[in-house]
Image (cartoon, rainbow, N blue to C red):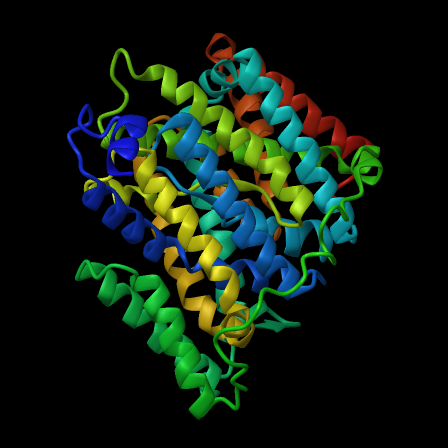
Length: 434
């Protein structure tokens, strides 16, 4: 068996061993296992059956990561993406009023588009056409959007008729536990403790049984049924005119998030070298296929996880690392009762910490070039302030094109930017801001 694994994954060629790869897989899983608790919580707020979403999350993470490992031989794990699940639940369903079935349909359509542009080579063209400043801003804006959701879930931010938002009641056990959980996560992560985010979520959950009247539902059981979400997507509803901008947002964020993560982790693993680039093409195809496969199972967009870098840091270099991650996600199917016991204020600290890390992309902006930095800042600020990733993208692309036009820098703007800006502008004129 050992020889089969060594030959199939070409371990010696990559200077690694079975033990190193398996430990790297365990490391990656522990750093991203928080999604098992956060994804059902977020999509559950949109009215989706949480147990079924939990199963869908486990299955698509296992399936997507398995394909990445066996087909592309990359040490990269996939799972439903942070930010896109929040956009799915809080903007598309709760904000715009679409059903979660239509939202799943929009994920499916965006996944099909994603697969087409990957197969035809358009993916690289689109990526090159979008300004770096807007790409940095998208990540930062989603970070601030997640931060607002996290603070609201923890009860630290509350609504106010006078000021829109205000400080919540910090005397509640939920708010106190969320604050302590956040400090614990940051401290553990700074001390390089593997699984810091997961430890923080579990610590707050355990404390909630003693201090916040949470009910313990057990740890292990047979997996719940996936039937409530399996093949429940409404594709025809997603193809209606009003959902065009929803599909566009899913597509654009998937494009930047997945591609950037794949390139970043592959570069760190030393895989972006001549002779190994064919594996990158397979990796791009694997993550494209995972998006619409996830929509069929019943979850928001699936993407490559930057946490895979922790496994690479631990020595993972091949798909055997991904195979280990996939096996652990399958094993997680049996901890549904534990996932159901995790309250929103236990996942809020993890969400807020992820949000903090996403803001660092703003440091990459050229702050001396106003036609670059202003649209980027508009993009980032509009997402939390309008409670919509779509509006942030729209304002960013429109303002970027307009500023370049009126400052005589039209030649600096790629045709893809003009196209996206026009689509968003027409959407505002015809449909409005909803």
